[in-house]
Image (cartoon, rainbow, N blue to C red; front, side, top):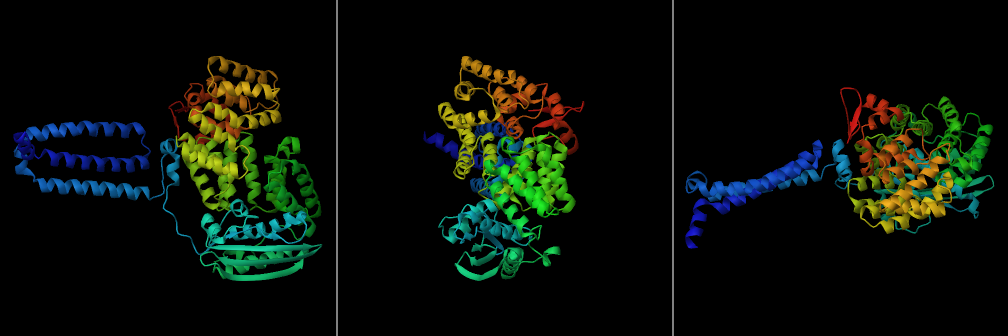
Amino acid sequence: MTEFIVRLKQRKLVQWALAYVAFAFAVIQVLDVVAQRFGWPDQIEKLLILALAIGFVVVLVLAWYHGERGAQRISGTEIVILALLLAIGGGLLWGYERSLPSTSSPNTAQRNPGATAITLAAPISAKSIAVLPFVNMSGDTKNEYFSDGMSEEILNALAQINDLKVAGRTSSFYYKGRNEDLRTIGKALGVANILEGSVRKQGNEVRITAQLVRVADDTHLWSHAYDGDLSDVFKLQENIARAITEQLNVVLSGSQQARLVNAGTTNPAAYNLYLHATDAFNRRDYALMGEAVGWLQQAIAFDPHFARAHSLLAMIHVLGQRRYGASLSEVEPNARAALALDPRDVEAQVALGLLARVQRRFNDSRAALDRALALAPNDASVQLYAGQNLIDTGYTRDGIAHLDRALAIDPLLPNALYWRGRQYLYAGDTDSAEKLFKKADELGLSFAVFGRGAVARARGDFAQARALTLPLFISTAESVDCPKNPVVNVPVYLNGALGGDAAARARAVVVLDACLADKPAIVPAIVPGGLIYLGQPARALAVAAQGPTSDDGGLWMGLWGTDGQAARRLPQFAQFARKVGFAALWDKYGAPDLCKRNAAGNYVCE
């Protein structure tokens, strides 16, 4: 035994083993950096790790047979120093890379989209603010829309200033009626200052009181009360917004130097109706959408040049529900009317983009949303819509970047949380996905339970997945009349689609077949989406290719997720992509993340 230990020392076997382990560690860390940056598939990393493990044995064998000659070429001390340098260098590089924002490649976005959110905590700029909803002091809850509208108009005006970071509306309004400490709010929203206030409206008389608070030390930087009547509200908003910019030493540019608040009308009656409609739209109170359409039409009658009334009307028609008066045929005329009056109307561009997306005119949709982004890069909703559109058309990596930007501006934007959660789920990060789905659910997003159900399904808890999604599936089926008798048929579908055996899946397919047999004017998205779940991807593509479904957005998102892989790999997917309009977009902007264009000009996807 003593002789064996002597030989180990002579051959420096321990030193060589330590050096090799340090070398392997450094290589793995460098590989992780390079793989993230260039989007290498997981298999390359796994193969190299296996090779390094085999190499460890080879090095030990060579070191043993190298014998005492090794002592003449390199000392044990030198080997230990080399090992330490390699280990420290690799560790530093790995740690440095982890501190950087990810610029992952397309493959990385699918493998681990969560990497795009890994950044160092940014310092809070002194030129940052959240505008909390002003308190309604009118003694009449029916005036709530007016106090909310006043604060929202000021928020919108400040959000247009490039020199100022403004927390998004959804996140700021989340704190309405909550007695949260301002420091807590500031930290949650990443802002250094908070504007709060109150509005008292009695008949035509208006009093707005506002105060600016520095979060760090709860110092009141400025406060003022403004009095006027309904015809003065635009001037009052302008005075408040301008006072904020002066207190925070914000640099104004261009037309902002003359005017910050642009209400779009000088007619108090038209503006009051617009605020009513805005309140209903922001709350997505679909039962009120029919009335909101009437309010906006009346506002336009009061002021035919009210561009914002036209653009909001277009948004209600594109995002509303038909049973409550929404009509796609009304979207473009109102959006075009708004742009004719104000070529910089962002909402009108978004409405055109969303309409084109619904109609599968993907080039037009991208162009319109790109124009909206250029006009309002700091608008969380615009970032969300652009991200959704990119993900739906296969550009997952870029879409995730826009979702992350939306959440940086408006951390509590429910739909952005849901879509981001979906991308985490497709990457296999169920814990991160679950957190975002739960937060979206807490914020009142009705379909967030679909995400929670998907997490349960990914974990193999099919009973929980069915329990979570059954009520909303029934409600959805009732709204699109498919399947008939949803209380009976939806459970049959879910039993097959979520963990069912062959017999259960067959019964689920019968339910979907019954939907198609009724020849609906618009195919419910549950049919092609369900066929993918039930292992019939070819039929799913054939059904989806017939025309827009009741929810193309959700259908396309799933198509580019893990469940859609079987459909993407079918030979007929290239023809499908050409028919629905994907290929025309890819021809212009390049192949999406998971596809390549072959010599024949067709797209082969994985």
